[in-house]
Length: 261
DNA sequence: AATGGCCTCAACCGCATCGCC
DNA sequence: TGGCGATGCGGTTGAGGCCAT
Image 1: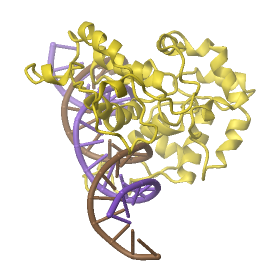
Image 2: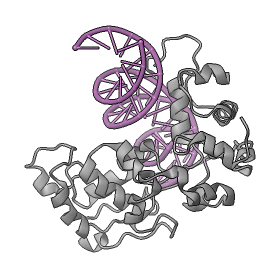
Image 3: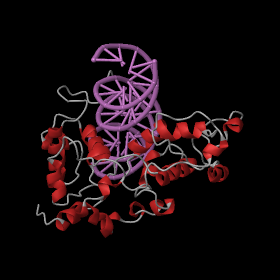
Image 4: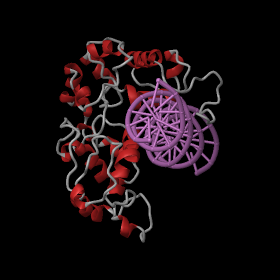
């Protein structure tokens, strides 16, 4: 991609991951759990740097990930949290079950930002654009949260179901309704999302552990499982309830799945 | 059907932070 | 306390897909 390699070692593969590489990585983490990422590629037989492995796991292979567009409730929560936290994507992601910082960051930049601008809201300051011109633009949002909450109350999120065809009108009547992209599991009270077990203790959250076995959650959000498509082999892991991740203690995971290693 | 432009998102880089010695 | 390595985080890039013409 036209950049210097992050790893100066020659022979380190870069670019999109293949199904075979995914398989090796998951197989390794299944067997050994998450250990030091530096050692993972060597031990797993991957020609990747540890950083790349970690990102691949965190952003794509983790079994607890939701896929698909963020729901209206999730978007509202992201906006709310962004007003408070600024561009601290990892902290924002921690409040949204099954979402990664990378995913939220991308969604913010490609969808939410545009919606806010369209509504006359400065996405950096969460203030009306007219006012924000005079105000210094920064994204820390520390002292903006109180004020921005007011604007957010009026800011009834609109979802351009088809995100390409966004009317440029800033008509207030349009702002008053943000049609659902199909009701889905994410349309729960944002408060519930905030209080999701990530903030408490996932390792003892049985409902979370349960989703792996019922297999419905991943596909719930009008999206696809991270393991669909060409990675059919991954279904094998889902079949026996693979759920090892940084969110779940590996030993517990192994125990819960009857794995003995 | 071809093509050019736009959009999305996976993956990258570089810096910050943390923990160990 | 400073150095060093490992990991985490946020910004950025670009390949590939989608849409309009």
